[in-house]
Figure 1 (spheres, rainbow, N blue to C red):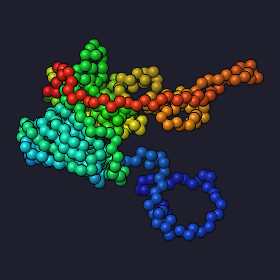
Figure 2 (tube, helix red, strand yellow):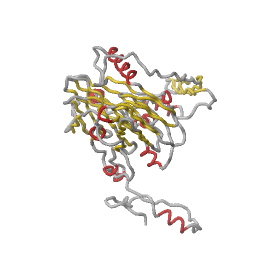
Figure 3 (cartoon, helix red, strand yellow):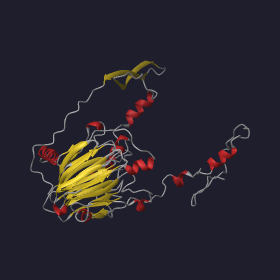
Amino acid sequence: MVAVEDGLSRLPSAGAAPLTRPPIPVSKHAVEEARWGETANIFEYGAAANPVMAPIPVLVHPAILHEQGLSRVIPFDINDCLEIETQCTSPNLMASFVRVCVGESIETNAVATSQAFYVIRGAGETTSEHGTVSWSEGDLFVVPVTPGQITHTCVVAEKGGAALYWVHDEPLMEYLGVAPTKKKFEPTLFKRERMLAEVEEIAHANVGKDVNRLGVLLGNTACEQTKTLTHVLWSLLNSIPANSVQRAHRHNSVALDLAVAAAPNVYTLMGKEIDSSGNIIDPIRCDWCKGAVFVTPPGWWHSHHNESAEVAWVLPMQDAGLYTYQRTLDIRFVDDELELHRSGKIRGSSFTVTCKQYTDMVEVGAQVPHEKQVGMKRVWSVEKGVEGGVSSGAKRVGMKRVASYQQVKEVAQKPCSSGGSGGSAKFI
C-alpha cells in the first residue's frame, strides 16, 4: 500500500472514471519495483498544494557578537527554527560575522558558488587563490567558487578587531546535493567611496522628486541580464533620509539585512497584510542597531522608518539573483498595488511580459520560428496579415511568424574604478 500522510484524505472513488489499461505480464523485477515503491507518497492536491512548513522567523544577530572576543566566525545559524539539518540563516543562504583581532588572521571556507564580504569595521586584507585585496570599512567584495581557504588579516581596527559580514550560498548547494565546479563571475570589489559617490549622484538627480528608495543596486558584469551582485546573490546599499519613511514593499526572497548605520528610532515594520491605505496590519517592529543583522521573511510587506535626525543606511543580502533569473522575485511596491486595486485589478505577477504577448505566442502556434545560428540572436516577432473575405463580407485577420536575427553584442569588460568622486553622503 502507498502511504498516506496523517491528516490528508484519499481522493473519493465514487463516480470517478476507472483507469484501464491492457493486461501486462508479471514483471521480472517485482522485488526491485516493490522496494522503489516504498518511498512513494501520493497526496490529495487541495490538502498538500501548500504544505505546512517551518516559517522564516524575524530574528536578530546582534552587533555585540563581533565587537568583542577572540578571532572567530560567528554564524547566524537558525537551521533548527527552519527544521533544516545543516547550518543556514535562510533555506538558501548562510550569514555570519567574522571577527579578526588586530594583527591576527583567520581562514574561512564554504562550498558555495558565491561568497560576499562586507567590511563592518577595521582595515586589512584578504588572500585566496584569486589574489589579494586590501579593504577598509564600508568596502564590499565577492568571490566565486573557491575550493581552498580564504585568509583574512586585520591591520587596524577599533574594538580590538575588524568585523566582516559574510554571506554565501552553501545551504543551497547542500539542498541540491551538489558542489560547484564552474566559476560564474570574476572576483569583484566595491569600494566605499565609489558606492557613496553613486548614491550622491542619484540624490542630486532626484532633487524634488518622490522616490521610494535612495540607494544603489550592486551589480556584476557577469550578470548583465539580472543586474545582481552575482548570479545568486543580490545586494543594495540603501539610505533612509532623516525623519522619513520608505513605504512598504515585498518580494519572494528572504532578506538578511545589515544595519550599516542607524541612530535610535530607526526601525522596520513587517507584516503579511496591508490595509486600504497601504499600512501594514499588526506589524512586527525590528529596531536597527548599527552592525546588527535582522531577517525579513519572504513575501512579507515591510517599510523602513527613520524618526531620527541622521541618515540611516542598510545593506540587505538576498538570494534574489537566483529569483530574478527564474522570473519569480515578484517585487511589489505598495502604492503600485493600491492603484491597481482602485482600478479593480488584482495582479497575478509583476513580471513584465504582458498577457497580450502570451496571446500572440499562442496565435502563432507558440513555436520557435526559425533555427539558431551561431553568433546571432533570434528575434521572435509576429505580424498581422489580412486574408480573403468570408461569407459575411468581413476580412479575417491572421498572424504570421517573422524570422529575423540580430548580431550578438560582446560586452566589453571595463575595469572597475576603486575611487570615486567622493560626496557628502556618509554611512555615519
